Amino acid sequence: MSQEFQGTNPDSPLCMRFWTHMFGNGIGSLRVIIFDVNTDEDKVIWQISGEAGNAWYQGQVPIASPSPFKIVFEGVVGANNLGDIAIDDISIIQGACPSAPQVAAGNNGDCTFEVDECGWTNPGPRERADEIDWVRTVAADNRAPSRDHTIGTAQGFYMTLPRGSVQRGGDRAWFVSTTIKGSSDPMCIAFWYFMYEPFIDPSGPSLGSLMVYISFEKDGTSVLEPVWALKNHQGPNWMYGQARVQNDDDFLVAFEGTWGSSRGNGFMALDDITLFTGDCSTMPEKAMTSKADCDFQRDACQWKNTTTDSDFRWTTASISRRPANLPDHTFGGPIGYAYFDVFNQAARPQSLTFTSPPMDKSEDGTPICLTFWYAYFGASESTKLKISREIWSLDAANIGTQRPEWQFGQVQVNTDTDFRVSIIGMASNGGFAIDDIKTYGGGCRLRPEDAVSNGEETTTP
Ligand SMILES: [Ca+2]
Ligand SMILES: [Ca+2]
Ligand SMILES: [Ca+2]
View 1: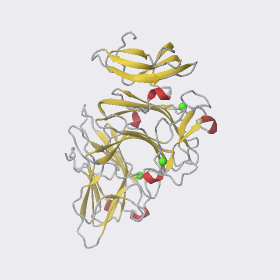
View 2: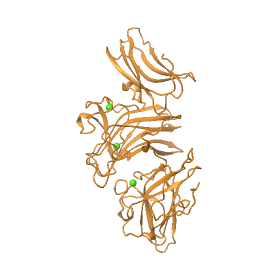
View 3: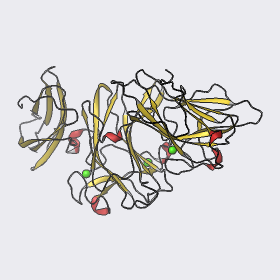
View 4: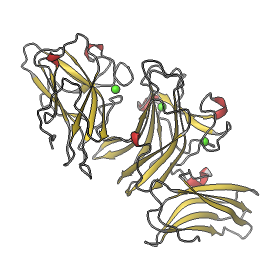
């Protein structure tokens, strides 16, 4: 048993490395246990059973605990006394590391990809989750990254988003964990990512995106919640990513890689995934997500049409039904946005509402900035888009271009109470499309210039 350690900082767990030797047919098992000094509880974090050959090998395990703790090595004697377990050279360094060897991690989500995918899987075409698959490759077979993250050599393995089978910008690959046990204690998922676009053309970076979701069942429906998201070029090196996940029920973690239009010359890869307990913050900070964020590539996320009129509604574009051949804003694909259209000269102006999931009030009362892209078509007098309660409103008739084009909008939303955001479209002969809704902490100015606010500051509860 170790000395007593202080509780670890949730953003800075420890990595314990040690060498072990387990030889003889009577070998039992070796475990590493975290003993919580406050609650007297034991938690097995690493475990290996049986003979491992007459050789030393290195084990490692992430150590994270909110309260003071001791680390325990526990050797269990096997069926007979033929054999010895030895440990040597224990070192503890700052920073998360995936459990190793893989067999000791027990399919808990940790993976270095040196042996296999550790139970992470690629959904196939039948599951209709994605179009392509992540591929485990040795660094030597790739132009970039030229080294993996775990061992830092060309002989190391990582997961890469392949380009060969990609049909179009917007093609996605999912990578899904084994079931993670739900808990009221928050967990942290940490990983290393590589998002590199060597040549950025004048139209700007367009590598694509890497997102992390948790997926779980709630009230009989499956919910997909983004917990981490980054777009486009992030530099020519491996970068550290971290996201907080907390769910009372069992859940899956899913990485989603999506190619943008620069798929021809970009690189995306993933290595050294590890999960540990703790209330960590998002790293890098710009990868933070909110429940209202949606790029509409898969579906409308947690946004819902709440119009009661059954003739017209907010919906997602499909190949057979989309307005004015408008391409998606995110990746320039044929679909991947939400819209409504009303083309009925006789009809009175319709008012159609699109409502966000419930959003929590902020702890310190700082507002958020809601940003989005919109396009309109059929700019008659009555074509309007508003964000409730009239904190943002745009009259399409005042602008008037012929072809629908994506334009940027943003509005500050106060968060002193729990709230929802509603986007209300009005038209008798036209409509609006919406894409890439994203929220950021902090206030912001009204955009575009022609949008008006009637001064009300709160949104509908
Ligand atoms: Ca797939
Ligand atoms: Ca690796
Ligand atoms: Ca989109």
